[in-house]
Every structure is written in C-alpha cells, then in structure tokens.
Length: 265
Image 1 (cartoon, rainbow, N blue to C red):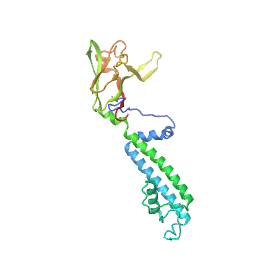
Image 2 (cartoon, rainbow, N blue to C red):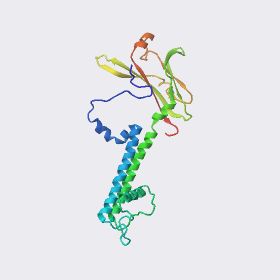
Image 3 (cartoon, rainbow, N blue to C red):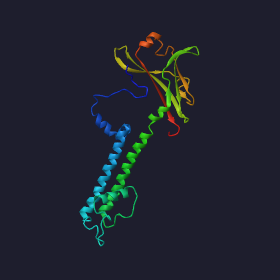
Image 4 (tube, rainbow, N blue to C red):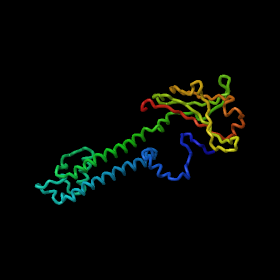
C-alpha cells in the first residue's frame, strides 16, 4: 500500500487544478531555487553567471566600438575609454578583471569616458546583486536540514506491549552525531480516513497522539537513543481496536522530530 509519508520523510503529494501555479512559484523565486535538485541549481548558477558576464562584456565592447577606440587601439597619442581594449575578447578580459578585482594593470578605465564610469558603477551594483542572490541560494541549499536528518535514526517498526502496567505503543529514536539537538521535541500524527456524524468524509484526517505533552516527555534530551511511548488509554484513538483489527485497519503514524542543530543553528 502506498504511504502518505515515506520512510525517508518525502511526502507523496501532488498538487493539481490549482491555477496560476507557475506564477506562484516564480513570485517566490528564492525558495523555488532552493527546492530544486542540485543539478538544476548548478545549471542555473553557471548559466546566470555566463549570461551576465557576456552581457556586461558586450556593453564594454559597444562603448569602445561607438567611441572608435577599436580602430585607434595602437595610437599612443589617443586616450581610449578603456586602455588596451581592441576587440571583444579583450573587453571580456577587462570585465573579468574588474568583476573579480584581479586588476592586472594592463587594461584600465580612463577619466575621458563618463559613460564608462556609469557602466562601471552599474556593473558593480549588478555583480553584488547576482553574487548575493546566487551564493546565498547555494549556501542555504547546502545547509538544509534534510542531510542532517540522515544521522537521526528511527526504529524500523513500532511495537505494542505492556510498560508500567499500561498498554503502550513504543518506538525508538537516536542521534548518531556527537553534536546535540537543542530544544528537541517529538510529535506524532495519526493519519486515518473517517466520516463525521454529519456524513462528511475526511480522507486524511490528522489526529494527535499523546507522547507525553502533559508530563513533558515530548521534550527530548537526545544524547542516547530514547524510547517514545504512547499510552493506549480511553483517550487514545487505538483504544477501540483489537489486535486483529489493528492489522486490517488502514492508517498511518507520522513521527515528527523538531530541533535546532547545535553546530549550525
């Protein structure tokens, strides 16, 4: 039977018939880029820089072409807009040297070119915006908590047995790393279809399973593996189920562990 939430935490949900879905994703472009797969992130990263570099290099070449600097590049008595720019490759190299603050000293802007100074200011602002957006996106992508969850282990199966004289649903959770999970809290959701007294059918109704809210047992000090317990009492949704009906009933338990990574926040 297909699960609502896989063991790796991926939700098997597909949206449909929303209307304007593409525009909604583009309106939140930063989050959309972060959620993309790595291969698309790297492709957009390389493509954006390549297009921006070629565009700005073309602007420098257009200025040199319109001023006639390309035809007078080797005239020592003439002061060009940018020294030693006499074709598109040299204009591209000047842009890279300026953008990367390499500054070899062979190509440099002169004070005889006000349009070049304006383009230089525009290039600096545009470069800062592109760097902040793309590098920030890559940093957030690398620091996503999905990879941190690889070292948080849950027991493969849950078990029901007696503990402290009470029938209890139990499973274990452990942290493999030495770095602690600060303010770790665990919650359990029971996903089950049900019909209301009014006749409304709820295909994925979410019920909260008590794992120690009243006693504070849901607040975890996750240094060693811990056993999480849900007491099956009169308030539990499993109270009216027998062992046989438990095996045939269609439901799913989703366990959510929240916390702050000590090393990265």
